[in-house]
Length: 313
Ligand SMILES: Nc1nc2c(c(=O)[nH]1)N[C@H]1C(S)=C(S)[C@@H](COP(=O)(O)O)O[C@H]1N2
Ligand SMILES: [Mo]
Image (spheres, protein in one colour):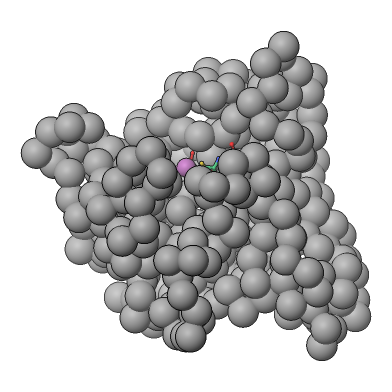
């Protein structure tokens, strides 16, 4: 695997996997390691201000599945393609240009992103294809980054864009182009500012492997996985609903909101249940019911008060 790692962090400085397997432990040491790698002090205390909030009473999906069973069409459409085909991708140096309707547009270098206070967040991820995982991300609230650029009063949405690098991303250069590039996504500003919404820079105690969206990707745990745009190079505040790649490609199948909703079936399959990867066959006994808002309804349902989510799917 070609996990990017800041040049002066060596493998032995990474928090042992056993720490991650204790899902009630906050990984101060891990994120501290990343911060140290970025030249800032490591945290001595647990990172999360509200211990217990971002853990789950569900087994973590094995790391080999989190980093081996992926959707990242820039590297191919097969689940193993992103891991197999992303070895030449260079996630460093990297920068993310943040602009649009903001008072202080700014381009953040990777070191600046790693210098935000990092937290571990163990989140469910539910792909629209009806499989799911439980993933220990490392990252920071998107709101922290948005605060730094000071969104203007007329900013209502946030648009995101993935890098375009046909020479390093075989899915962008082959004869068959599965999607229009760049991959783009968007959130309403209040969704983007919600405390559950993070920019992730690591998973399982390591910086993000290329196949998971190195060096920085979005994670919005109450939405279908395709909202979690990878390898972000641009973030733009706007007053109009931004395009979303899957919505543009197949609007009758994928909405802009894409909130996980067991009551709204995909036109070609049911969304009522899901297969938890690593726990057995797709059609086996291990399917579990899909939860409204992927189990995060208590925190996020209020964002959609008055909206008909069967229409605004
Ligand atoms: N740029 C880009 N981002 C993307 C995708 C993609 O093809 N390209 N796939 C999406 C889909 S469909 C899912 S389910 C998640 C998968 O994230 P993971 O491979 O880290 O589990 O990434 C999302 N982000
Ligand atoms: Mo997905």
